[in-house]
Image (cartoon, rainbow, N blue to C red; front, top):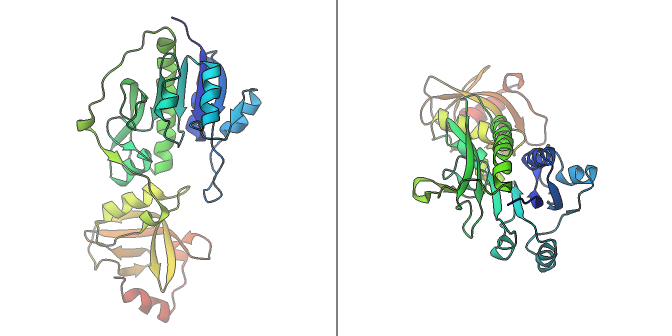
Length: 307
């Protein structure tokens, strides 16, 4: 069996890199679905729409599940559908159209971290590894048979962006290995053991609020899990939001949320201390924490400690 006509749903760098790998292998992409960029999101990543335009591939920024798109897909009659960082759940009416299956590239080592923003969750939860998994799509999210997957290491100093780059490279490697086997009908299928995994939902900026009663390591993991280019971990001072962009855990102890020293800035937690390295007060530019100018009034405010 030889099958080469594809429909691709994709967004972000991961989408671009996986499409480029398939094009390198000579596939025919009949149509690409992508997203409009959100005005509330920092756009630091490459554009799938621009990539499609450069290669002369038709590209739509509408929901693949829309009735008119379902009819369009039936007319195309693709061999496969691939989803690479596409943010919409693809419904059964679409999943049943490709002759040889619909597959998703998920940014974790499934069945762990099924669901949304798996890279951020893995860093926030202090994992030491994650991965990329190519699997068949079914009704349930991230639950279909696994075709191939690759692990990546999460270093203690890695931010979510660092890990995202590692996962993207792993995703390309998985696609590179899997496509020739899928095309020839020789790819394996391993049933996913959902009971051995986990599921996590999406995150909102409000979820970045720092709970100073947690341990220094937990707070550090939150900071590196949502730092640039994500919304950041934050706290409040005198009614102003303060985003902590960089920090590290250190030995010591102090009352949770209290600043024990100002240069370097050391903050007490539920267990250990956090050294704040860079921060941003609402309405101001990001600066190194030890560059802040402290007056008596401000120092007293910090010394009062946040609840």
